Image 1: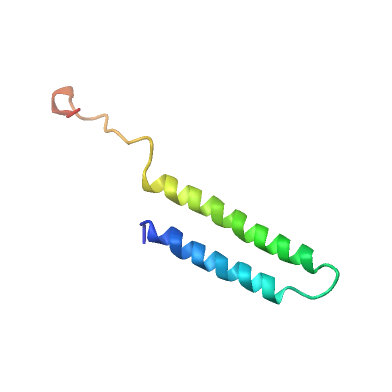
Image 2: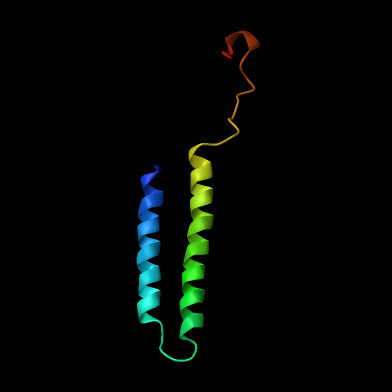
Length: 75
């Protein structure tokens, strides 16, 4: 499951969890605090995961073998 669809599926799950937090937050004077805290936590965790996941899909630094002779390296 190491492809770009994981990010989309994760986003759909986070949207579902955010809607559930909006609908099922306890009623009362702290309802806005509950809603905003839960949704902000969900979105923050998703962003950290998505950034880390996408950085590993296309790394900037490519590993290189050091045990190959110079004449066999293709540039």
